[in-house]
View 1 (cartoon, rainbow, N blue to C red):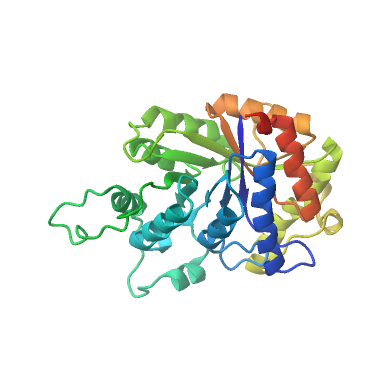
View 2 (view 1 turned 60 degrees about the vertical axis):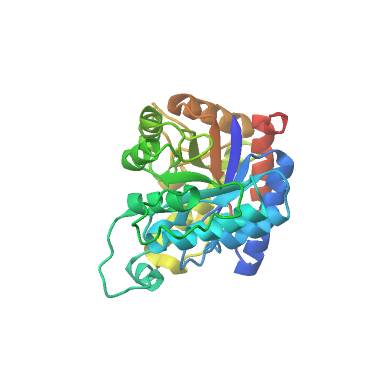
Length: 339
């Protein structure tokens, strides 16, 4: 099983965003040393609890301090941007670090105010043309605009010998099918829609076209939220910070910050603290928490059900030292350094 990481640049209690961004670059170095296959940086806007709003900047920095691990976006929210600009940016990253760049593409809302602020043309209602945007990015990478197309003369890929690997990120069967039909790789957000993970990833495989748009179209990743500690009890306790953050986000919106475990313990009800963090009666949890063996057992069940051989972990843990320890324990449990 391949193990990868999606990094949110979580702002630890009592720390600021500059420190969170530094921690995110250090995470790439740690992940490479531990044997992780790739690290992706998220795109979150107007958030007090996370600092990663421009993944392309973190990708460049992380790639410059590592030598093996793949580095990418998880994801660039393409619905907000020009496909041409995204293609240029990631071709430049690929030119700087050939063979190690992933372009993860997704679509999401950050709320009506942020969505409006990100748009250039604010006088025209937005449209959902994600599939067309993805096709345009691929055409900039690989060529193929008809001669009479207004963009036919554009060639941002000239002089760049290789191309980023393109992934579609989603949490539904619709995005899975689109990725499969385009011959693109697909990463499913199991922490958003755990009940739909196996169905979507199997659907992606069923609809996968020949890999015309990349070196190995049809690959799948299951992305999960996971906390690993020395014991099951300690992992569940560390996970309280994430649970309490979700509650805070509902009450405070973008101003919410991740609480310490002690703060979370005071804020959460007994029922919230006891929310399942392992598979029970076939139902997958939104977040996995446990000892290395417990989490390994959960991931093995999940990868078997989805038919994938790579797991990407999101770890929302308040204490950076505990976060680093969680990543190290998981890498050892899955023996990724040996692969």
